[in-house]
Structure formats: C-alpha cells, structure tokens
Image (cartoon, rainbow, N blue to C red; front, side):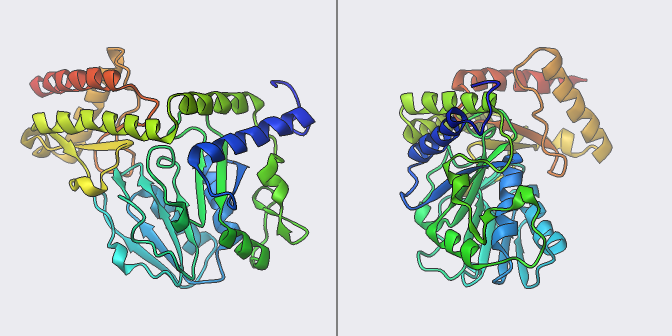
Length: 352
C-alpha cells in the first residue's frame, strides 16, 4: 500500500483492518469505538480532552511529568474552572480515595517518567457520573485493562508494541460517545482536533477515515506487530513477557546495593517503564552537578561500548537515574546482558 492514497478503497480497508485487529487483540467491548488519530498519544489525548471536558468538574491525578502536562493543559490552556489536582511526587501513587467520581477523572495508567503504575482499576466504581479519561500509552498492551471502568482511553503505535511514532488511537465508551454528541465546547475547535461532523461524532473516523493523512508504511508496520502479538498468544503472551522482563530488574536490584527502583512499593511499580535510582552512599554524597557528570559518564560508557542500551537516562524532569523499557517487544536475555553491563559500568565509574 506504500504510495497509495489513504482515501482509496484499499487504503481505507487497511486502516479499518488496523482498527478491527487492534480491537480484537485488546478485547474491547462490542459497543466501544476505536479510531486512529494524528499526533501519537499526545495528539489523541489532547483531542480527547478538547472534545469532552468542560461540562463537569475535573479531578486530575498526577504522579509523573505527563500527568502534570495534562493538568497544566486543562487548567492553563483550556482554562477550565473547578479543576482538582491530586498530586504525588515521583515514586509514589496519589491517594485514590480522594477521587470524586461525580467529576470527570483524568489520569495516566502508567507513569513512564516515574515508574509508578496503577495496580488495577478497583478504585473506579462501575456507576459514576463523570467520565474516566485515561492516558494508557505505555500500559494498554502490557496490563489488564478493565474496560467497564474506562470511558475514554488513548495510546500510540510506538509505545508497548514498539511501532513507529506519529499515530495515536482513541477508545470511546458509549457514555463518552453520548457526551461528545450532546456537548459543544465553548472554545474554537481546530480541524485536526474536531471529532464531529454536522454536530455529531463523526463515526467514519472509527471506520478508517482518518482526520488527516496517515503513513501507510506505518500502517503495514502496525499490522505486522499485531500479527506477531496474536500469533504468540495475544494479551496473555504480552503480559507474561512484560512480567518476565520486569523480574530481571527485580532480581538485579535485590542483588546490588547501589541501585533500586524509584517506586519503592512493588504494588504500584511499573513493569514496562522501569525507573531506577542510584542509592550508593558514595554517589549520594556528591554535589548535584557532580552527580549529573557521573551519570553522563555512565550513560556514555554504555553507548560507547555498543551496549544495546541507548537513551536510558531518566526523563529530564525526573530524579536522576535510569529508565529502561521492559515491554513485550524486549527480550529477557538482552535485559540480563544489560544488567551485567550496568554492574560493570558502574564499577568502572566508581573507580574513576
């Protein structure tokens, strides 16, 4: 399909196939909608916020940088009143008992920059007045999602299953569809964000008619990834592989006294975005700028030795440390090799 129009009958069929096969893999309920949107997960989530928020009070859960971004966009860009931000620092989960489900509730499932993840959806009631709006980009193919607790959810093609970027996907429950159909936001809606046609949700978006031009090369890439996942056992396979990868670092941290998980409580520790902190007393005694220098040396050492661990420094706004992707497209054996290099590299930096 490379070089063909996404508006051609064959192009639309390919896009529709992406939607249908993704729905099957995720075991979405029959009455849920799934569509392809521009701008990766960021675009999909912004589109969700712009089309659904403003009719109710809003609770925003924040425990990593992306949750903080959503809180800022809701309060400072959309300038919505009655926004209650329930925030916790890096490494911990907010008190979920504080959430008011008469309000719309906005949250990330897995904090990719903090290594903190929701353990389940038990804290969300079945009967709720507001919508639950979830950024699940690094969680949706690695954890069990209880779809009865979700109204709006987004993810991207490049997270979890390792496809290329630029494309996001939007899940809508019947309640979310009802909200969008019956609510007209007060702000101007850019074409790229507009989910409506003639005042109602444009259902063609959820049948493969995308808002703007997608990459048909990446469509083929996504279909090949879905085929790989299904042929190996589907969601059970993906979740098991993620768990096995996480266990590599659980063992590594238990055997080494210089490093540990940023999320100390295993109940809410991410198994996909493993965030590690340096706890070596020698390192912790250094001035902050010296810690930064040593960490840069450590990362450079790994890259210069052609270790398959590029860009593993912690996110720029997170505590200094390492962030290692352990999702289902990563091999356990490669992670085991990586831990040996981490240990060897740290000893080399320590001696310097």
